[in-house]
Image 1 (cartoon, rainbow, N blue to C red):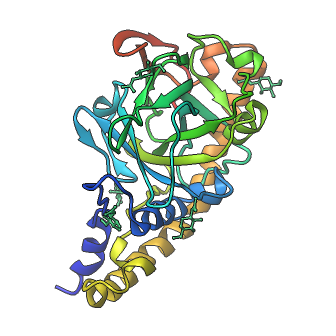
Image 2 (image 1 turned 180 degrees about the horizontal axis):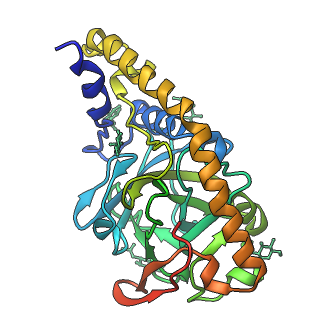
Length: 309
Ligand SMILES: *[C@@H]1O[C@H](CO)[C@@H](O)[C@H](O)[C@H]1NC(C)=O
Ligand SMILES: *[C@@H]1O[C@H](CO)[C@@H](O)[C@H](O)[C@H]1NC(C)=O
Ligand SMILES: *[C@@H]1O[C@H](CO)[C@@H](O)[C@H](O)[C@H]1NC(C)=O
Ligand SMILES: *[C@@H]1O[C@H](CO)[C@@H](O)[C@H](O)[C@H]1NC(C)=O
Ligand SMILES: *[C@@H]1O[C@H](CO)[C@@H](O)[C@H](O)[C@H]1NC(C)=O
């Protein structure tokens, strides 16, 4: 029975209490803890101070943070909605950029490995006229890169797909090379794009994982944080069981970090291949492939067949 405790800790889904349309402090803490555990913070996002929870729903099923999903389950663009934290206000007329980036497997150095851009929509708004959670309103937006479902290369481990919503300043102008609707998926450094585009606050983000086949390197994965172990839950009745679950979770985290170097060497091979392809002008060949879903859901064609990311 004791041996089951760590397993239970890994399976515990993060609590997302959204029934009243307000994200609790614990929801926000859980989001931050999951991003740190997945090493997305500070690897991809140097800081992460969300003012909302981002709900990402594929085929009517909202994902849990970091959920493992099949490629087919995420082939078509998700519904995205925003549940503000208690003290956050979202004003009418504010525009946002919605995007999805493949941050590869844990252990890939995200400061030196580009992320694949799977989705980039400028100038969306939030349907704040109705009660939260606020749906994304695409009216007047520009789908620079239409949603392209994940297509990780076999054996490259569990890829982390980050869906993020940034505030756009009123003076926003899309960078020249990423302003035209219908720009195919490609690679970029997300933080560089955010800086070049002059995007504002990261309102919130969520992520899921997709793995193709069995990793040929020491596999790494990230597990959900048990929200009962977070400070914000200390006063709850879950506190007594939380401490035993926490030790299971931390030993899992320890073994994950030990295998990090193995994955890093494998993924650096992938990034070398990708930069070689880019230098040779191979275009889409150096880029992940994905199933492009045109506009708001018309199934398009398979683009490219190069490195899976
Ligand atoms: C909504 O519920 C959360 C807990 O689930 C609570 O922290 C928050 O205060 C509630 N908000 C309102 C407006 O009742
Ligand atoms: C909301 O409250 C949290 C603490 O409860 C604080 O860390 C955060 O900065 C506040 N955000 C705003 C926008 O006031
Ligand atoms: C979406 O945005 C358009 C343009 O700003 C607006 O006319 C429309 O009412 C919005 N729809 C919703 C559901 O908020
Ligand atoms: C767009 O151009 C900038 C230079 O202005 C460059 O740094 C960036 O890598 C380019 N982005 C893409 C996706 O090609
Ligand atoms: C994802 O799957 C891996 C096994 O492939 C497992 O170790 C990990 O706990 C799972 N992560 C989540 C968040 O369910």
